[in-house]
Length: 117
Image 1 (spheres, rainbow, N blue to C red):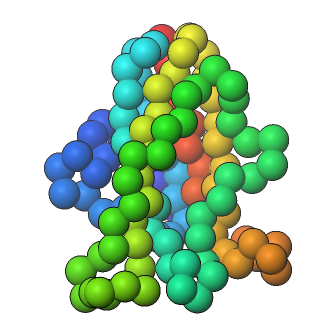
Image 2 (cartoon, rainbow, N blue to C red):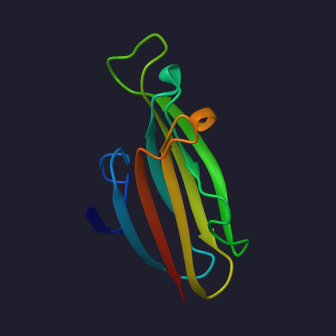
């Protein structure tokens, strides 16, 4: 499993999440960072949060969905980007699974741990 210590993920041309990953992000309260997930919706494969994952103390905002190069004019792989903003101090854990939701697949897993303070 790949583990990342996130300092500016996706803001400097880094790759979107497309494999089993653990990310640990230290950030101040009311500060934000963005995280992108590589989806293949034309085949039904998307990243979804696990039930009971996360916290109401972290605001998650969809930012953009961009078709990846080589898949024009449509279909294929997209990068879906979200902005995370912790609203209080604490440690917050989010789990995402990649697969086809109607089959309840969990082909890949991303764990995001946000430490806000």
